Image 1: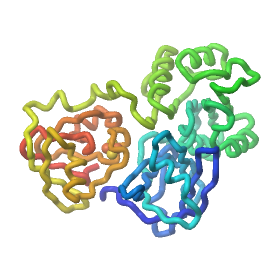
Image 2 (image 1 turned 60 degrees about the vertical axis):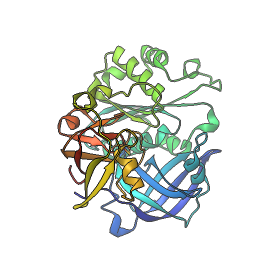
Image 3 (image 1 turned 135 degrees about the vertical axis):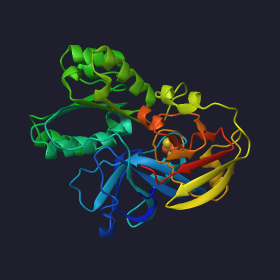
Image 4 (image 1 turned 180 degrees about the horizontal axis):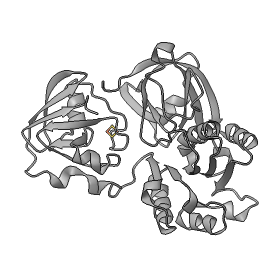
Length: 362
Ligand code: FES
C-alpha cells in the first residue's frame, strides 16, 4: 500500500466557531472520495507555507460519516501557533494541501454500545464526529459527552451539539464543564481532572464502569488525569482510547514500548539509511547524534510522510527491514508494532551502520 500523499483541495466554507477557532470545510472531488474515506475520530494533515516555512499540522475531522463530498476540521488558535493563526485567515475558495485521513482514535460504527466521550477545548472535534456518527448509525447506542472549556465563549460546535441533544433526547447526554465561569449546577464547575471524574461518577452523572468504550481527547495532563481516575474507578485499560494534542514534558505514555532499550550498540555517526517509499529506494546519510531519520531526510531533499514530528500521530510509521534504530519518544506505536519491527521516522536514530526503512509496509 502506498504511503499517504498530499492532495490540493479547495476550501468550500470557513465558519467562525469562537473568537479563536474556525471550522474549515474542504470539498472532496469525486475522484478522491475513496482516498478521503474516513472512520470517525480520524484527522487530516494540512500543509502550507507559513512565513516562508513549509509547515504541516494535523486536525481532527468533525464531519459525520454521511457528510458526502466534504470533510470539516476544527482549528483553534494556540499561543505562538503559527499554523493555527494562519488557518484563522483561510477563506472559501482558497486551496491547501491535505493528506488523506489517518489516525487510530477511531470508532467503527455498528452494533450497540454505550460510549463515554471526554473532551477538552478543541478536543471536541473527533468526539463530535464520533457522537454524530454513532447516534445516526447505531440506533440502540447511547453517547455521554463531557465537554470541558474555560468559559461559554470558548465552546466550539455549540449549535451542532445542541442539535444532537434535540434530535437524540433519550440517547445523547451532554455535560458542559467550565472552569472560569460559574454554572448553576455547582458540580459542573471546575476543571476536568481526576477528582472531578470521581465526583461525577459518584453522583451518577457519568457511568464509566458500564461504558463499552471511553474516548478521551485533550491536552496531555487532562488525558493522564482521566486515565488514572478511570483506572481507579475500575475501568479496564482496553476500553480507553485517547488522542494527544501536544505531549507535556516527561516520559511518554508508551515509553515502555519503545524499542530503544532492546537495540544494542552505540549510535554511529553517518549511518547509511535506505528509504523504501512508493516502491522506490533512496539512500540518505543520518548522523544519529545530530539527526533523526526525518530531519536528515528533509535536509537531503527527500519528502517522507510526516505530520506532528513529535511521535504522536504515526504518519511517519515505517518498518525496519534491516539494521536497528532507537526512538527518542513513542506516544503512538503499540507494543505489537514495536515487536513487528515498526518505528517512527520522526523519532528514529540509527544504531547500526546500515538501516533500511520500508514506508510501504503495513
Ligand atoms: S510525524 Fe507524527 S509520529 Fe512521526
